[in-house]
Image 1 (tube, rainbow, N blue to C red):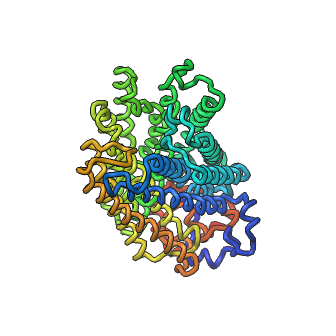
Image 2 (spheres, rainbow, N blue to C red):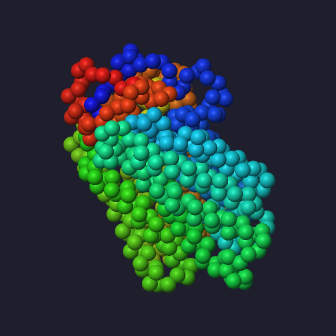
Image 3 (cartoon, rainbow, N blue to C red):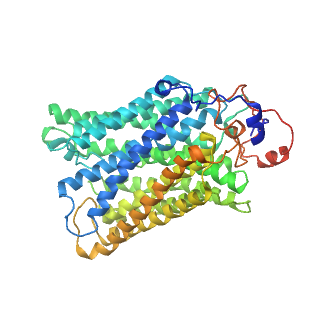
Amino acid sequence: MSTILTLPDQATARLPKVSYLNKEYGLKSWLLTGDHKRIAMLYFISITFFFFIGGAMAGLIRLELLTPPSDLLAADTYNKVFTAHGIIMVFLFLVPSVPATIGNFLIPIMVGAKDLAFPKINLLSWYLYVAAGTMMISVLAFGGVDTGWTFTTPLSTHYLNTHVISAGIAVFIAGFSSIFTGLNFIVTIHRMRAPGMTWFRLPLFVWSHYAASILMVLGTPVLAITLVLVILERTIGIGVFDPTKGGDPLLFQHLFWFYSHPAVYIMILPGMGVISEVISTFSRKRVFGYTAVAFSSVAIAVFGFFVWAHHMFIMGISNYSALVFSLLTMLVAVPSAIKIFNWSATLYKGSITFETPMLYAFGFIGLFTIGGLTGVFLGSMGMDIHLTETYFIVAHFHFVMVGGMLMAYLSGVHFWWPKITGRMYPEGVSKLAAVITFVGFVLTFFPQFILGYLGMPRRYAAYPPEFQVLNVFSSAGASVLGVGYLLPLLYLTWSLKYGKIAGANPWQATGLEWQIQSPPLTENFVDTPIVTHEAYDYEWLESKKGSEVPTVG
């Protein structure tokens, strides 16, 4: 990828010991920093906190569903718990997880820049995120919201025992955090690439973030406007969604899902970028069909804006509209299938090794494929009418978002952890955590496909006794899954002090980020690198082994 290669032993010998983790600077320097790497770490800490808050809500849900009657939580409390779980996990974890942490850290380095285009806006985006999260936690403390994470009308506009306004403002603020991040990425990728870093030498990780950033910037304002309209109808009674006041009850669904289905790709596209990097590195091959994979990210972003109405098949849209959106829903699976095929072709005859990031990547491919295929089922109107209000939807969504996005996030965290911290983690425990997470996930959510097909409705605290066995399996799996998520928190924290020194390039990967010291310098590079090789050029990397080459600063 670059004519400049840093071998691990050279990085520690030639580069100054001034990195973004320098301990001479105090808390104030972190809170006022413009360094994209430090902001990424601030995001990482914040997002991890909200992930475990959302996970605790999920634990309460599964404990309640161990038995058929509503005997642990009252029905109203259960509504507030699953709403809090959804809002926190979607808006405070899944949407920002990879872009705000790994993307924030790596995109400037991957394109050969010393920072993002707008460092102050980058810091502001983190402060907005923290403000949104703090407001959401206060909503939980003062009574919660019980509309579901989709703020569906008339629940969000008519009922008084729920803090819709505060929760809506929190999501509104979080949306602006995403917009600022997406804007920063777009400008950086367009304007700050190193000499020789053409569009078709960019890592696929950058392509996926570029596509996701377009979705953030174009789609998120629609959600913001929708929430403002809900708040106005709730406070001053204007008739936007209420038909008794001249409003349209379907308008909310159109507006909300016009953002929220593209939001699925805001969440999953960055994760797909992670998988491209990991698959290539641990099979020691170029990504098969690089151009097709790059353009498939753009295709997903474009198609994502044309499938929103498949969420409304049971809500009264015309049969003609439903037919068109059913076809478009099936077509959006094509660019995702291109990625799966090309990753599989990359693995073919590769020198595959099974390090922890690769195990998580395999988990992503398996779980996301199941989630994607069940999404095609739901694109069929007949199947959707039967399944849309059942646990089949819950299983499908979690296979895509949790099985897909979270596995990709953990793959990326483990892959770039040596670069971020300069330390390795214990490989045996991390591989065990990857296996436990995969097994726990399947045990948790696969029974929900069966429950949904049999007709168990979602969002209910009580259910018929014949569904108890499968719910016990699901709750038991959630316990296993919790262990799988807790283990990385423990051993990654341990590795910060006791982990083996990583060196610059422990995986012998090709990207620019692997050609600088670990952890990186505050300014990333002393001299701007010059790029003359395509991405994932392992043949060139092998040819340079043992040769004396200059060091990227």
